[in-house]
Structures are given as C-alpha cells and as structure tokens.
Image (cartoon, rainbow, N blue to C red; front, side, top):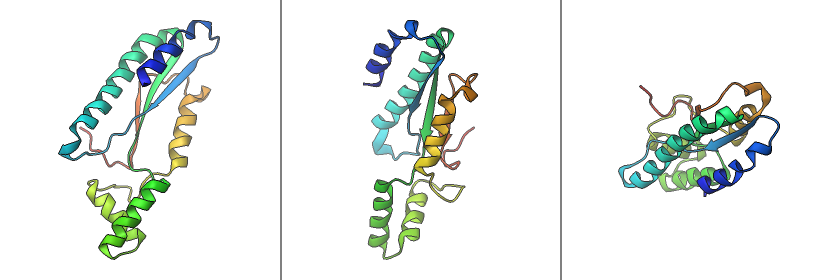
Length: 146
C-alpha cells in the first residue's frame, strides 16, 4: 500500500511548486526470532525509502523515515497494565516488564505520541528543508547501533 500511494503521489509532483516531504513511519524494535517476516518488511521499507529519496530528492521531494520504538499509546498502556496484572504489580512494574522484554530502554521510559508527532512536524517543516533520505529513530536508545 505504501509503495502504491507513493507512486500515485509521484505523478502529481511535477505540478507541485514548493518542496514536499514524505515522512515514512517504520518501527525498528528488537524483535524475537518468530517475527522474521516483520523484520524483513521493515528493513525493506527502510531500503525503499532510501532508494525513493535518491530518485525524487532532485525533483524537490524529501523522503524521510521515522522509526519509533515503544510509544506510550492507549494500546501499549493497556498491554503494560495486563503485564502488571499478570505479575501482581502496578503499572510502573508492568512498564518495567515490557522494557526488559524489549532489551531495555536506556532513557528509562517509552516515547510519547506527542514526541513522535513533534519530530514528524519538524521534519515536514521548512526548518528541515536540507534534510533528505535520512532515518530517525525515536526509541530512547533502545536499538543498539554500530
């Protein structure tokens, strides 16, 4: 679906007068082995975003990728509460269980939806006009890098 939407939008780009940006959210959490297909799809999305950026940046369209880690949404709060109930602890204990399962979050907490939105708004704004083809992780440093 992502690729179809991008290709459809790409036909309109020649008519655009101003610079455009296309933030592409993708998740980059440490994943258990049973999620190999999910991990492969997310890796493909990252590679696709980079390739697309190379193709369309000269036409004035910036492609950026946002890779959120654990975000404290209603669904993730409910999940942490279930983990807490199963372990006989409170919500903070449930968050710790989830963070431990993820391999830890050095920042000590999940990101908020507002933090993710703020990043995307910045990347789509004129203040980020020279940024293209980049991936931004917003994960509290939970994904180790080389």
